[in-house]
Amino acid sequence: MGVWRRISLLLATAAVSLTAAAAQGAEEGQAAFEAKCAACHRPNGQGAPGLYPALLDRLGGYVELEEGRDYLVQLVSYGMYGKVKIDGVGYNGIMPAFASWPDGKVADVLNYILDTFNADTLPADFEPFTAEEVAKRQEPKRTPREVRTQARAALLKALEGKQSAAAHVPVIKGAVDGFARNCQGCHRADGEGASGSVPRLTDFVGYYTQIEGGREYIASIPGVVYSMLDDAELANVMNWMLKTYGEGELAADFKPYTAADIARFRADPIENVRTKRAQMVRRLQVAGLIPENEDGLNDR
Image 1 (cartoon, rainbow, N blue to C red):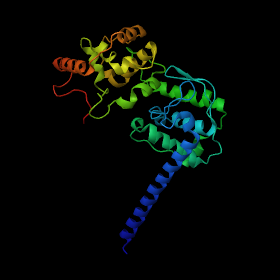
Image 2: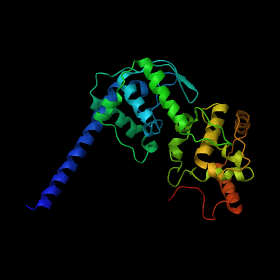
Image 3: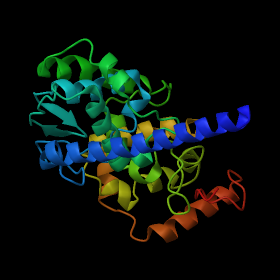
Image 4: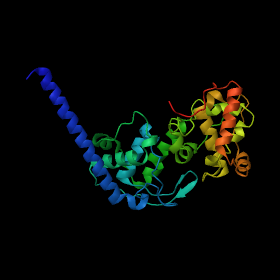
């Protein structure tokens, strides 16, 4: 047998072994989640109001940050207690510690939760957790209270730091979680939208602020006005969204949304959003802001 053939066989064997290991890890992660996590966070990841936060479409943004990966590992390993607020909703449940779990089991559970409930929000370069990474991120060891006051606090600060400053749109506290929970499932973490059905935000949504009725339109669609956020929180999310995905296209005289604006829009929501959107897109085309064949739907 030639040298290159032996190398090819070795590589093929290694690939099969890695695939089998990944499959086993996924099975073990699912089993551990169903045995220890699903009772509180629910089998579908929806959580329990006031007690246990939802896992669905919320964690993809965390794993982009070192602080986020630290927090997830320490949350599972050491637990957490104390009140937290997410999207304006208070939670006061107790997250038990699983300090006795092997590092590989912690990694398997985290990867299962991310793959199952957050696949649409994971970054393109997402790297699954490994036992080696878990062991590293378990340091320093923390009490459940310290996980909340130190690890979680560091994560929230890092999330806020991702919001680039803009002179005409204020830095918004708490909006990242609001977007992730209420918008990201359809519009995606990168703002590109679900292919062919959900309009993209990136390099597009800001154009609406340059045409008559556009500012009102994007804050009056049903998916916005019927969210569970209160008026002030929703205004913050809208301002953050425009700054993050449409800053380059914003009108020079754009005025950030206020709670009073949102309350007014909620009193008169758009009934036929498809028809209204077609009208607004046509205005963008007539104004020369977008090409005639552009409609903002992500079918690329």
